[in-house]
Structure formats: structure tokens, C-alpha cells
Image (tube, rainbow, N blue to C red; front, top):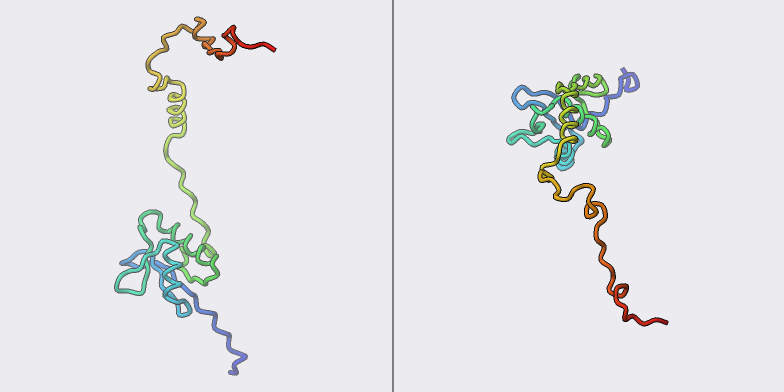
Length: 156
């Protein structure tokens, strides 16, 4: 076979992201990525170095790890880097998982908010001392300026 007949090798990925039995979601670098750039990129997508290895692991994988790993793959690709990911972690190969609906009772939550809005504030627990129809309650006293009250002002 001549050189023209062989398929050209694809550019190797900058990063590999997948599942590791011991460390959870991990990232490893390919050849064309420097250690400084690898650490900078992986730190931005919440991966931390694993001491004693060349791997990085997703921080707190128990907090929606698969979704965060998928987001990391997408974010790294937006930087122009090539990422090879496990099938389930590659957003280009598998659709997003459906979002879980909250199981809280929305009607009960809205009812509590309405009751709180309709009740008297604890800051206003003591009733006002003036009656609603008294002149003091409807017309506050306005102090008059000193020049308007004195009869000794100069005229023109």
C-alpha cells in the first residue's frame, strides 16, 4: 500500500474523560497538551489532580456527577480542545437526561406563601394607638416655617 491509500490518523484528543472504578469521573491528558494548560482547563471545570497519578478527578462526584462531567466535556470543547469521552458522558453522542421534577407539593408551597402574605407581620404585632378616623391619624401636623408665623417680617 502506498501512503495515499492509508487513512490519515485522526488528531489525538487533548483530553480523555471517563469513569474510573476507584476515583470516579476522571480526566487524563493526551500528548499535545502541556501540563500547565491541562491543569488550568481542568481546574475551571471542577477537576482536581489526584496525588501520585497523572489523572484529575471530578470534585464531589456524588453531587450530580454525570451531568457535571457532561458539562465539562462541552465546556472544554468550546475552548477548541478535542475531548474523547465515554459514550454516556459525550453530549454529542447521547442526549441529555431528562431533568428531574421537584417532588415538593407546589400547591402547599404557594398556600404557605399566601398565608404569610396575608398575616400580620411580627414587626407590627402591637396595634396602633390612634383610631383610624381621628384627625391625628389622617392629617399629620406639618410644622410651619418661622417666617410665615411671625408678624414682624418686612414688606416691600
